[in-house]
Length: 88
Image (tube, rainbow, N blue to C red; front, side):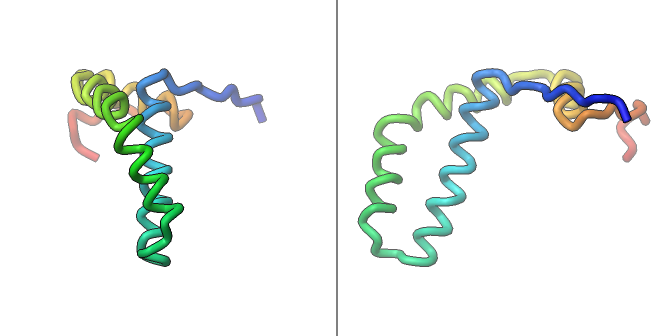
């Protein structure tokens, strides 16, 4: 089996992915222990310090053309699907 090289995320992709993982974890923590002050502090810190950069990166990703996004998904997934004219 050929060796697989790992495709790196660009800075915007990495920032959004990291924020998504953080927010999912914080959401789960808030459901599990809604009044945990440490979780609230982490969420507050994210909203104060990081949210503007994350939203800017998300907008950069949203501005990419669909064909570019599809190609990037294929690259990250490690395969290249045949074009089917929009039909799955």
